[in-house]
Image (cartoon, rainbow, N blue to C red; front, side, top):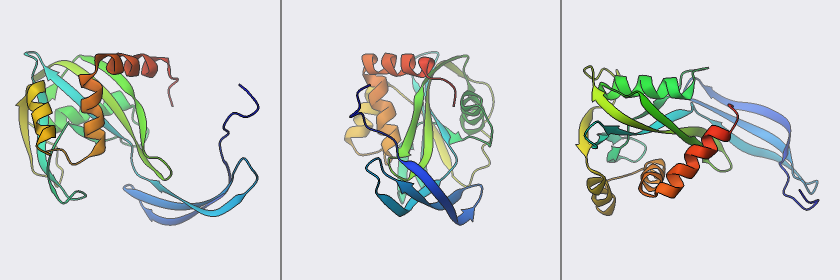
Length: 198
């Protein structure tokens, strides 16, 4: 690494401004930039990390959910997803959330990586997974506020849904793109396996 390599910022202080645990915390950090400048209030948002899953059934269809999402203020087509409990392993959370939301289970899972949702304020991390050979083993029992409809789609259906604007969230589009480009999907899987556990 050369001397002119980019360097991380140093956190000098952190002040909690809002604690609405377990859903949201807001902090103001004092940070020092590599050039020596100091920023007094660089805001950080903490939300629970979550798992997002591309789940294929034994016959090759993709398990999807259609539900109203209040952040987007509209009904959206989404992949199964759900928050990690404090200290929960991301894969365990993915399996739990898939069963709760859809009643499906799968034995063949591939981690595709962990990605921070907001570049400067963090928000949360999205842990992406690909599951194969899913089968329905129970009735859905998610207990959420959301009313959801489970749908099974072909990959062509998912592409057509994107063209019609049926997705409201960037991580869903990112997952779809990763699954449609085999080289990207394989690269993400290799990178996730090589990355030490956080």
